[in-house]
Length: 280
Image (cartoon, rainbow, N blue to C red; front, side, top):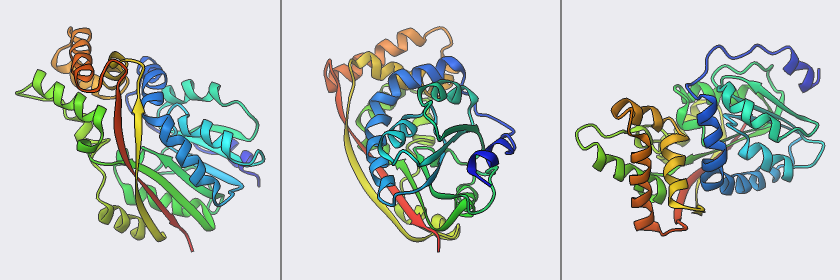
């Protein structure tokens, strides 16, 4: 049976995270070019090394990596991009309409695919959000063919990611008694190579590597950086809960801090870990 046929028969995911359409649009418009597009290029190059014929992408978001994969991999390669958020898929799917590219609503911890369907499973900055990482990694192992690879990226610590740490510090100053902690609690919380390798090994992967990749992020304006983080991520809910009528004012204050530290056309360092493993 082909991958396309299996997709048509797949079961949908049962739940979705709280990304609404407005947040997904800001994510795509601002956060993708600032943070995700530079890493997508590098991840696609790494993916192409094994010349996979079929690729499953987990936590595809609005398709930053999907677009890079489609531009880099051989045209016959079949790509299945999945995400738990339908709002993200609704924004991303229209941007990649080439043949052999499919979009699905799916949970990485309970993939709706038969065993040994893919040559490569790939995930850019999604693993941090998996509640049960070993279960998600085990699912990736299950759907990979013999000698298949699992490749994913995760953010390094907050302290070595300039824009994110600047936003976090500013919000801590604005809410000293109860600072929003989304950034340090989730996206920038999963960077211990030893723990990551152990979880990958527990899921059945061999020859696990974990390499640091440092890149530079450039934004059109400090306000873009502030809006990207404060309104284009789940940090928005934490800010609105604390100050429901002050979002515009808070974005402006964060933008002032970013501009003071990183300039009117901000440039800052980013650091991530790129993890790879293979099945026997």
